[in-house]
Length: 293
Image (cartoon, rainbow, N blue to C red):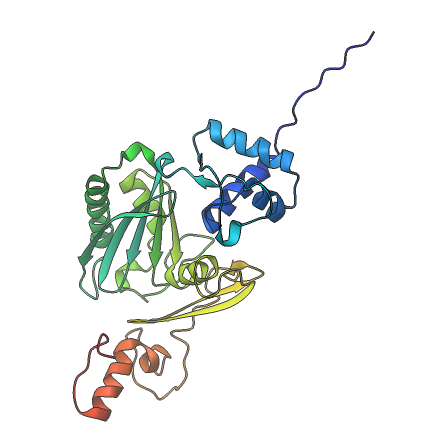
């Protein structure tokens, strides 16, 4: 008699990442939800979930009742990422500020720190300030540094996807040529990803906001400058070097006002928040703030 040895098939490595990504972007889901969204069998989902449970990355509630998870028959248990499994740091560099948050893996912001910067600040001073605020934020949230899986950084300027270097003085002249991911990674001792704030805004909107689930979207941010982000096929479109949505310094009038970049008639000189406030002041004869508008 021959003996047949049977083993439970291991889940494809890609399925594990896809399950984590769905729980990260959509929140609590049942096993049936995951099988439907991934177009795989319930057995495959169960194998992946079991592995994530063993690694402490998932938590499970008793049942899904009401809302989008309501089904006929016996409700399934809800799966979510384990908030205690890790934490992430978010760093937002602006023209006049640096903001740091710490969040858990269930997307809950645990604490926030902010520091005002000079408009034409020194880039390396801003990086050191971000490191200081990160340490303060981790202490405030009582998060063990060993649980921090990395830092995501937003920067209002073009970041070359090939070299990691900041490509223009959109934020401040001292940032040009700097590789902030490398510098911050060294200072923080953490994996760091740097992205343009316009791209991050677009990603946030199609993940959680007004464009949730959209395959094609355009995001425009008006602030001290003009930022934008493009989503094509459900993914960020950066272009060959990461500057596809950089049009704040596109010339709209060659004889227009001088921009802080040195050119004339850039779009930013007409539609950025400071430019719009200046136009309102000239029209109404009184100074107004962005908050009042």
